[in-house]
Image (cartoon, rainbow, N blue to C red; front, side, top):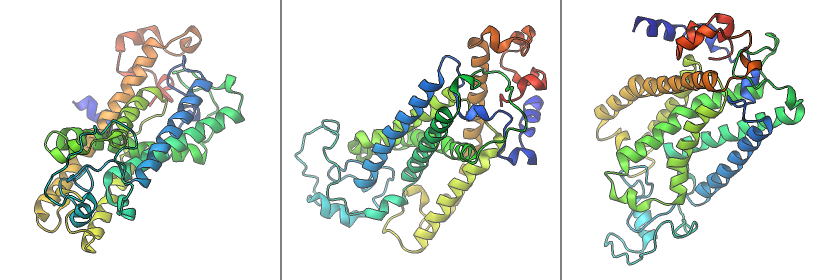
Length: 349
């Protein structure tokens, strides 16, 4: 435990606040040498364009399918706009819905053609995280593609070993933005997806009835992509950059307070953000979220990133990549990257 605490402390120094890294190429390539620069660039561009299309669908149609008598937003237990929804459904609260068409029968079936909420799409945390997720994908695609088309891709460092570039090579503003948005969205995207499928779907019939193809993209596929990216990209992780997650989450909480104070909706945006009826419970949940959930989530991402480095070092080695850099004795040190000499750890974490 003492060793673990020491390792974590090494990340929380002022120098770690700098958006600078010894190996800028880690922002342009995959962790794995068998993924060529062209393949990685194509992966990033296709992924960005695919999810951008679903982001546009989500915005235009208000976030997904609405079934009769379901809540106005499937991420909350209370319906923020009950009167509008009842008027839209045409069935009031009677629940006499005779439609038997499955939600997945057609991508466009049940999309909110008469969606009246408009700007209210912006009040939900799910949509905030999906927005930042898409911003990350777009910035990553532009950053990687720009580097691929403006440099000799055959000379890009594709090794999972220490960088051999000049130490004075500074990161571009685009790479810094890439890093910030990655840190901001990774944990929260996974958290929102996990919370949706474990805390809402099993216990709320309206949520289960409201599931549609758009919701799958907003609440599941984005989380799968984020987890997959942790093992595909070569981006480094810095525990001190948890501050970007706090900034994002804190901004949403402040927004929700202002929205509630201004009398934005008849009911809370989410049942757990009931500032009016249960302020003590809401405050306790937010404190627990800030002091427990976010740190554990960030430590989990850090651990997965270190696992990626170890797997890459162990199974993705070639003679040219390891010669003179990692001693043979390192194989007995497995997951403990910090046991390597400093020059061999440079650029890995």
